[in-house]
Length: 287
Ligand code: C5P
Image 1 (cartoon, protein in one colour):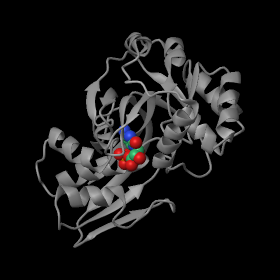
Image 2: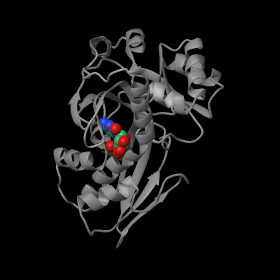
Image 3: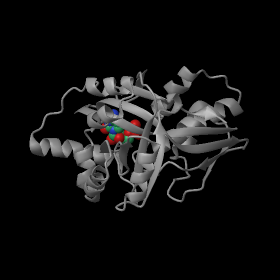
Image 4: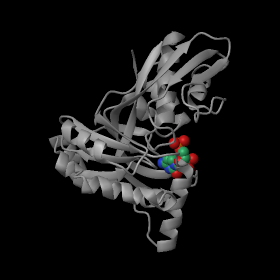
């Protein structure tokens, strides 16, 4: 049973105040893009994970393994993860693998859980897991797990500048809090950006480029100074918009069309690798 699952980029990541449970309330516009992981589930007497990428933990803290445990405690499965989404890159690769494992195990074990039930279990595993099941473009509230689809037209073309090494999500949120405390900048209760929603509904890439926002970007740049230069480079190459993806360190650039995306990707120098992708695409599906 093989499931294909997309990466995400956040078109708006507005971070509200720190909550008592250690999470932040968000308004988070997720957009699924055509960088895919694949997870293959097969019968086994215990939960075991294998992966073609050395940086992915294989023990019980692997999110795909945790997904299998959460779906049917005590059941075994072999999960083979084929990674294409950058690891710890701010594109929800770990959450994507958990979402794929939920769909694959539900089918392999004939459990008959509904998409809504899988989303509920997914939300307990990580804030980004429900969106990896849903795909498309959606606004997430709460810690990001309460989702409402967002109306979009057409296809948007992206370039992703992949960095060496990852960034820790909790560390980036912590740095965001630290910067706010140091500057006296109060966290505001976020709401969905109207210019962003309109640009998406109109399929207007230049307007979307101007409306992209990520409150975690200053924190990610503080922890990885080179991201500032990478974003500048993309803008100089004519990107319609440039931002850090989620908690980083991947940088996302919006292009006018696929040809423009290829041009930017070929010209970018200040990153390990640049890849192109388009969105929106569907969430986790059996292939
Ligand atoms: O839910 P997830 O496992 O992706 O969260 C990882 C970490 O990111 C959390 O432990 C928390 O530090 C931070 N986070 C947050 N507010 C959110 C989502 C994540 O502070 N809404």
